[in-house]
Image 1: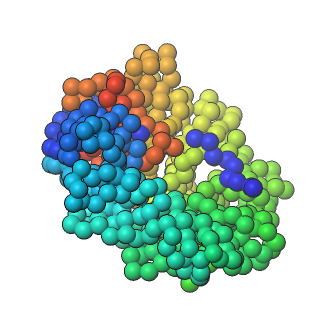
Image 2: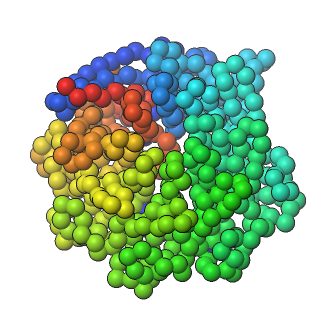
Image 3: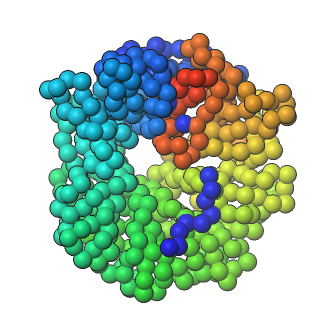
Length: 464
């Protein structure tokens, strides 16, 4: 099976009442306030204590509500989904409810909180439920009837701010074996099934990595058999399915598409993905398209801002905002920096941080980038490591979070070695460890390690 190339590359949760703790971070020009919402060893709202392997997933809405999942120790050993509103923490759903009259879900994980406070979560790793704080209703469950026929086993659910979900599913009792569906709470529709011909001809043989925007459009990659290409990225809304990038298609800037990384999708339906190229001097590139028009954001060998050339491909994650600006992490050659973090579109590219360059708020230099997020105003928040042995950096202070619109205004938010609520921060999360680093225009929610303690922290940032 062909699969995405080009990509390689964290929570302490609260007792029932959050205890605000403000401090000025290492960056002298930035005023930050850190609030520890929950921490391992703290009492949970249902009794027992949060366990150290809690807090794999966070979600943040515009009301500053933070949803998280956690594991609870004796006497009520269970998993659960919780919400902190800045003052109190409440349980949304529990794997095993200590109240015999309350619902139990086997396991409850992976929350998503909408702007109005509704929480979507996974039960038993497959089923999806929705809570409005008063009642919990099923959205999709293993064994449900699938649109187009058969019964489904769902996995890989994603949710948008309107409470619409998209998910992969294996199918049984049907001519199809797999599909991608979307559900708006009232009905499910098929985005793609492997018993329906691909719009490029031939049939889908593997469907994966769906992403969803607030318009309900779903982008995904697929292997195909027959037709004009054997791998592609598509965008569908339940009524129309359009190819965005397809193997053997001509690529902007020259060459032919061969393979693709996981897609991301903007609010307007623009889809971005990395690609490997054949018959090209570039070898790889980053592209954006909508099924009608396609443009290159960056190409292998192309000159990079601040010097050097793009080299060795793009690395995960890839992020996009509602305006179609893409944050990307790429290798570099011909310069002292081996890697760079940039924000770009088809018209311009802005450097955010380069390895080997000074890390603002420190006397050290950037060494690597662990995760990053992009906002609609162009700001990027990045978790980065510093080079040990340079500028007084050692393993106790070599990680931090920075935020800015470019390398000219990047500001340090927090750094390992900082003391938050009496605890010394020792480690920050990285991409692939769940959703442990989330951001919106109001703040950042992140999971930190404080020695033997793991905590969920909410941070607001303001310039002096």
